Amino acid sequence: MNNLESQLLAFESTIGKQLTLIDNHGFFIDEAGSSIYPRTRHSHQSLTSCKAGFCMKRCVQHCRHTNNHYFETTSEIKIDKCWNGLVQLAIPLIVDGRHEGTLYLGNWREKKYYKKSKITKSAWLKVPYYNDDEIEVYKNWLQLIANGILHSVLQEKIPSDPKAKELLQWVNENLSKKPRLDDLAESWGVTPNHCSHKCKKLTGMSFSDLIISNRIKRCKALLNNTKLSLGEIASQLGFNDAYHLGKQFKNIVGESPGQFRKTSIVGGESK
Image 1 (cartoon, rainbow, N blue to C red):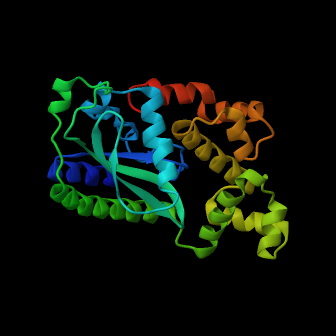
Image 2: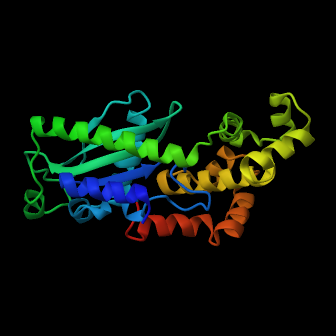
Image 3: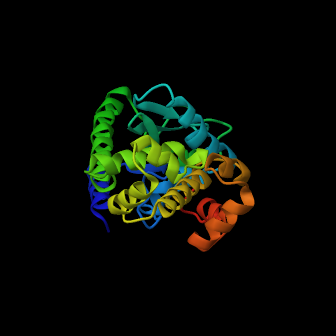
């Protein structure tokens, strides 16, 4: 168990609520391409009430896509009320102006039972009702843990060397444009050969391996957290087409993008 997960478990034990962390772009993936927190945190299905009323289409639409759209214009904590009559707190995790993921805390229930809810009324009544005063206290807790998560992850992920940070930022910003070594060299004002050596020194990888690594990480996040087709993902990541993305993905990950997405969604750990 890593230090971050230990902190999250301690926090949950203290406040008696569960945390769910949804990764939008692969920011919470380590160098090996694995999530830095257990997959049970990827989905609200680890919450008994959410699992009882889970609907693939509606739950994914609400918790991922609708809320991602909401957080395009605000960084404030949201009191999030879903179609099942459940309530959670949601806070966007923002790094350098980009919404990297969303941290959820819950569950509570609304005062009135939703007749269209997939959760039985008896199960729904077992979920504690929320009140405004209590929610304000939990908002403060959630802000603290969100800050702690970002601090912990940034210490591990963001290089202390300003040039390495600049390199990784350039790569992430240019993935969809089929980034070339010559382009990076030009932006740095050095020769391609010098740029190649600098990239290897800063990251331990060649320029081409760095691009591939970041593409696959981003692909995993998009497969997990969006409804984009493989062709649309390929376009976003600078691949010629879905075939080339699928081939490279399988060579590196060991399974096809479709299998990876199905495992993530249906495996009972992630939606």
